[in-house]
Image (cartoon, rainbow, N blue to C red):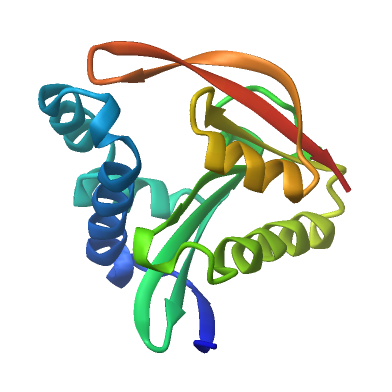
Length: 172
């Protein structure tokens, strides 16, 4: 079994996070979207400048997971005003939990989710929430296994394509 190490990311990690964002997102979604929409989405969401701005937000935190010293995944969590939907000050959003395909099934997602739960408990919050694409069956199964339940949905725009994300919540 590979040794998993997770660290809180800093601004010096932004280029790595940009690379992980693009690779993991492409591995999961490129077969369902046009190249043009993917490139537009990457430019708007995963540039070093955009991710640097997100990292500077005091209400957001990034964590990078390493498997045997190889970057394997990352997670971004948000509280308060940084949340992408108005959920109140009693919730923590798991905005991104992205694992490279080669490392799926290695329990890295569960290790990152435990950190999100620990952060929420430390802040005395009552729940976690996240959005997941309605057709991402693997992710929906993982989140159900972690105790999340669907409570709503919203529109997620990928490039020029409007898609539906299910909103899931887990009470702590």
